[in-house]
Length: 435
Ligand code: HEM
Image (cartoon, rainbow, N blue to C red; front, side, top):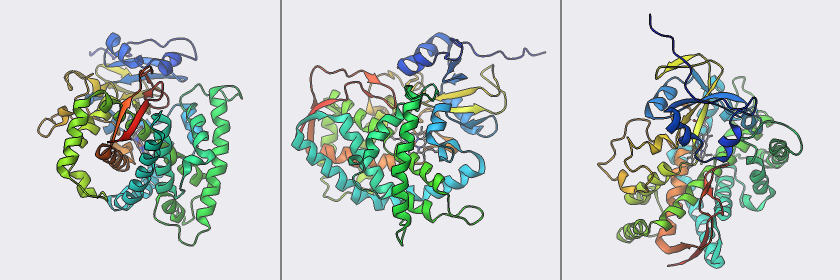
């Protein structure tokens, strides 16, 4: 008779709190345990027993068995703060139908129509940064990505100058926290911000709903949509979806762009090659999808940025039926987390995996195993805004390289904070100028 599988190795930590504090504070939480226990280990975080699974095989397994063994979920704090109707916390038919609807705002044709506005906002920010000369880039890039998301996804220009931006900053702090709703806890403060955010978002939704033509951006599509009974979506749902789109549409991108600026500043040889590519292409304004496509070295660099410092470290799934993986039992009702960050640093797949080397993605070099490169997740829950994000990253990076230079100021902490997304702890202080 075959031996019944045992639980993975690992430590469940203290009662209730488990290993939550190290999970939130230690950027090496997973790598340390990976070294100690191997690619599948157990822990207890954010109030739930959790198995962390690393590697291409684990990703393939989890993406393939979505809705059979596992189902997308988020820690309780995230779920409550995103709201009950948010696409991210839904599953099954509701998820499929809303995803299909929202996807229209991210199709190639829609993306192409966003390009001029994206370019315009990008140039305005570059002008502002040239005038400033020295500044902390993380905060600025956050405003920039927020303005793009609010302008292109929900038709509200200059979102970063409204109270929405500061409210988001406070709100995200509670997304991964112990869900204790008291006025002085991180979670309690975030919850209060959610209520204030919803008030502003309601104004945006109502203003748009009163216009004769609701338009074709994400909010326009949601406003025009009908549910199965032919009714418009409820105001509560509209607000949750807008809250999600604005959050997902700027927080991750901010991290990706800041990492690009940091890594390129630290690798002048990469900057030189990027410059050379732009010079060789000798492109005139405005940008077009074809012109962006021709920037092959830039594409390699951006790919490597997302490999080395992925904005999302992993994704949570709820186990809906016990299963066996790699000889271990993964029990029903536990959570699993698939690992983006650790998988993309697997030295068996990426030699010298800690080194920033865009040439690993040079044409002809790409022979990685499927699901070993997953900055946008995979399967049924793959990032909805993937192409929007790739477009914005290319526009930002191409225009930056064409005309500007930047250097890191001395005496700053460049080690990475991880909440809500990876960023240098001092926010990346730079000197910025025209070439
Ligand atoms: C570099 C930027 C981005 C990265 C690295 C990223 C990463 C991810 C990842 C890893 C997931 C899947 C999480 C899981 O498996 O549970 C995801 C989901 C999602 N992303 Fe992104 N994202 C980015 C930008 C965006 C943008 C610009 C939007 C647009 C508004 C967006 C909207 C979404 C949405 C709505 C989901 C949920 C999809 C679903 O549950 O069906 N993301 N993203």
